Length: 499
Image 1 (cartoon, rainbow, N blue to C red):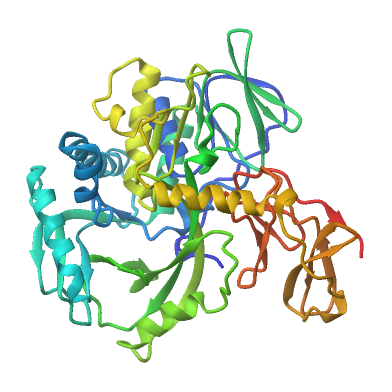
Image 2 (image 1 turned 45 degrees about the vertical axis):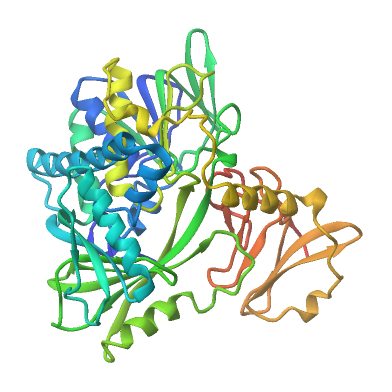
């Protein structure tokens, strides 16, 4: 399930596991694009920066994005004007437009070869009933001072009813970009430690202590850049957002390429853009989104994308398939700033809603300015401790219901089944003597048994029959069939049972 980005880069930087107690000015937890961008800016300013990563550098969400650098985040601006007001909507737009310029500036200053190119971006529809929404979005965007355009023709290989066009957006290879950030961080005396899991952050003796399994990091500032905040106390992010899984395929369609970045308005979602790979232009097609941990059949997730492509390119060859998780906030705005009103000098950036390329730069600049004690004019838009009423009350209700129903103490009992009845390649939750067991039988017939209770907040896990993982329907944690933790906010592995 490796992405095209991972296979396009021979990664030469290797890092050690943290093996001793250290002190630093800023401890950044997470080496994805957000954490590394923050480290880049602060190390350039002379701060002593340490980045702690539980796995390898930028191998999770950053390595599995479609890497569109854009302020066009679906049909968001009409929604923002209606729900938050015109001034906030304009600030959101300007912050993301500034992020595009910032990224280009970093690339130029650091001479990063990352296949950066400007492209027009489009949100389109093939449903005539959606044209009104696109026209209203275009009017809303123009009212904010940005020159978007309603169009009825694109370079897509099929007819559309209409689209909103954002000019001068961009795309790049995200791993080549973060590789350039890493080189700059190291040149500025920054430190990066990998394969090091952080378990907690606490205030102590007027400073902050970040705890790993065997060591600790003392610092004045901590930035939680771990995708989903793993610290449950005080921030309560598990009540304010959920995780969504989406799928991407990289397809060789020959020489019949087109310009532009595209995404449609309604389910099923399809996203298109081309990327450079081994001297060719390869089509990236994304979509088939669903809430992570949903108890649904996922075996056809990639097939949905492949079937769509082959409607127009019958000889298309799929080179890579991968999927990723994104944190989705209930009001469609990321959480950036103080982690909590009750923890000084701890900052967070999360809930990028599938638009992490620009949002990561917005977040890095806001947090950089917070540490510098400088006012950032976009800070109030993304305030992470905001308490205004949740606009998406339906989704909030679904989250509470799903979380409650999935808690082990409230789960209805399921009928007992014999392990013998489980087919090869299949996983199920079984119950014996009031205890639940997650049972997976691999293709060789070997049985793997885990305690199917998420180590984050105790929700009952569902079996993912595509990736062969145990997924949490509450907050999106994932574990492989042996119980090894793969995705946050959980940080501990599942318990194993001998069968």
